[in-house]
Structure formats: C-alpha cells, structure tokens
Image 1 (cartoon, helix red, strand yellow):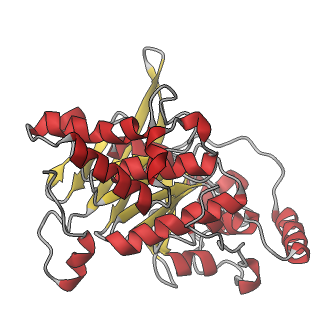
Image 2 (tube, helix red, strand yellow; image 1 turned 180 degrees about the vertical axis):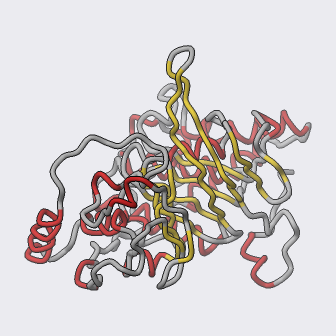
Length: 363
C-alpha cells in the first residue's frame, strides 16, 4: 500500500522528523543561460532565500526578474553556475530525475498545456504513482491508485467523475485544480507554484488562491509562490522576497513588505497593483506617473544598483556601487543605499483587491 504520511503541520507540535521539518535553502545562487558558443545571459545573480517547513514564501518580480529561473534551479531544470541548494540535509545541486526528492512538486502557469489532452484525468493523476512505484520497487494496486485519485480530486473540490474525463472538457480553473491534485498525489511537503494563477480570470484566481491557502494550512504544506503580482501573493504568503534583474531587492514578512515597502522597486510594484476603489487607483496612477523617469537604457549589471536607471531617488552612488542586501530600518532586508531616507510611505497606497472566491466551486 502507498505509505501514508503524517501532515508536516505536525512539525509545529514538536514531533516532526528531520524529513518533516525539511527547509529549502538557496544560497548565493547564480544561473547563466548560454547564448551561442561563448556568451551567456545571467538570469539569477547571487540570490539567497529559504522556505522553512510549513511556511508560505512569495517570490515576486516583473517578467525577466529571474524568479522563475530560481524555481527551475530548485527543480533541476536550469543550469547552476554557482551557489548551493539544499532541502533538509540533501544537496540538490547535482541531483537529476529519479534521484531528486519527491517531497518537492510543482504547479506550472498554463493549465492548458500542462495536461496531456490524449489521456484521461485519472490516467494523468496516476502517472506520478506509477513512476514512484517503479522507482522504489513498491507495488500499488489499481484499486488503491483509484482511491488516491478520488481523494485528491475531492481535496481540490472536484467530483470523482472527473477521473473519466479529458482535459478539453474542463475550464482553465478546473484544469489548474487538476494540476494541483497531480502535484499533491505523492503527498509532497513543498509545493512550488510558478505563476499558478496568472493565466486565469480574476474571479477564478481568487478561488485557486483560497484553495492553495487552505491546503497550506490544512496539510502544513510549505509553499514557494512565484508571481509578478504583489497583491496576489499577499493573500497567500507569510514572507516575501522581491527580485529585479536577477537580484533580491527586498525581503521580509508579507505584512511589512506590502504595507511598508522600503525599496523603490517594491514601492512601484505595490503602486501597480489593482485597487477596488477606482478613484484611489486613478490618484495612485497620477502619483506614480509624477515619479516616473523618462525611458532609459538599462545599465549593464556590475558594480551598480540594477534599478538605478528607473529609480526616481537614485544618486551617483547608486550608479557606481552595488548595494548589498542588509538589515532594513523597519525590519527585513533591503538592497538600497537610501533605505531609511526615502519619503514616508502612506498606507493609502495599499488597498489590494480581495480574494473572496469560494474554493469549493470549480468553474
């Protein structure tokens, strides 16, 4: 029979094994992608972060910030030029394929391309079970596999009859629920969500976010939630890490980073998030435009702040000296020479849209 696991939330009660209390740690990660034979593009430049057992950590940044490359490196899908990735006591750097721990699973962005259109949902959900049995030499009867599939479908709010149907018969939100069920079938302890709601309508986003939050709390799942939308991840994450051009700009508790951003880039991310009050959003857009700089060519990465060409507060030091990630005046960490000297931040900037969708409906 497929081995049952105690939910990792038990770690909070002091009874966790080393496996249950495993923490994902990324240290000084560098990821370079080759361009031609002799050149490369640096996507991740010295990033360090951790996902403690049972915590939800948001990794935020605009397109091209390197956040997805961090996830790919953790999953063994991107080349590591330098750095170290550990999960518990296991070093993941050189592990590939079956050697990698099954405790780490992923939900990708596109629910339409992540499911095989020629296979039933039941077959797709059983694939990880068959691979696990082949790798470990354990046997699992067809009836036991069917039972696990039904249990996972129920866990994500889908009826048992879903297993006999094909992906084309489901909406985007339902497909993403199926993708989550597939990721959970091996009972992982860490779930990586790479832009898992960005391809969905806003109302469906809210439902999937609430589902992930429920699973995080109920199962004690660790979450690494990757997105470009700070207001989205703020509903799920307990800690936030903000990236820009391959580097960490700011990190800290979600409440602190979202309510009192201490890096100019984080402030721009917050001000670009949708608000419920249209008048407030219009006023905020006007403030943002007043601070905006004319388009400037990106400075080459090196001994300079990567955000200096877009920062309305930049001084000469920002263009010549790379700021190191250090303790911030209000808590957390920030990579900014002017941390503590920026104009005060008003709480009126942070009125995010609400995630109110039900997790039990499945449109």
